[in-house]
Each structure stands twice: as C-alpha cells, then as structure tokens.
Image 1 (cartoon, rainbow, N blue to C red):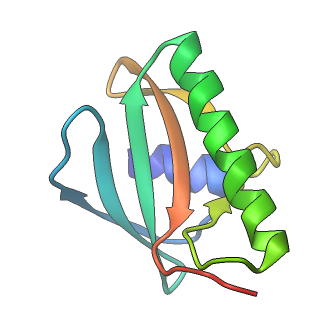
Image 2: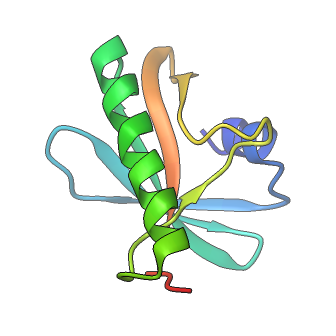
Length: 103
C-alpha cells in the first residue's frame, strides 16, 4: 500500500497506521512530515459518486470560510477520489487532511 501512495501522490516517504473503522478502512498517513487520513471504501460506482460529492462539498466549504473541516488532498493527477487495486482488491481511495482547516 505504501508503494501505491508514493506513486499516486508523489510522497517521498510514507508510514501508515490503521485506525478502527466500520464499513471502510482508515489509516493515519505520515507522509513528507505531514499527517493526513488515508481512507479506503469497498468499490462500487455509487461509492465513487458519493465520495466525489463529499469531496466537492468539502472543497466548497474551504472557499466559504463558514466552518473548519478536513480538506481533500489531490492525487498526482489532480483527482480527489480514485479506485485503486490494494492488495489485489479494488477499493475507492482518498486522503483527507487530518487537521481541520479554515481559511
């Protein structure tokens, strides 16, 4: 999984620590001296659409300065949500900032 994150995000060094989760797996991601949350979800087109919509809302809120919230971190190609093969399993993946960001 670390190799995928290095390739997909262009990080120089990656460390993961799994967190407890219910329907999806979450990891504290230490990369390039920053901590974020790497989130994986069981693959489905509906999940991709839902996570893309959530990311759009979070990005919009970042512009409005209404509240503090986690912010999506883009993949190297600029996308915020991507299906990836992790350990032979197709998962929907994204990274959110661990700290809550406000403008």
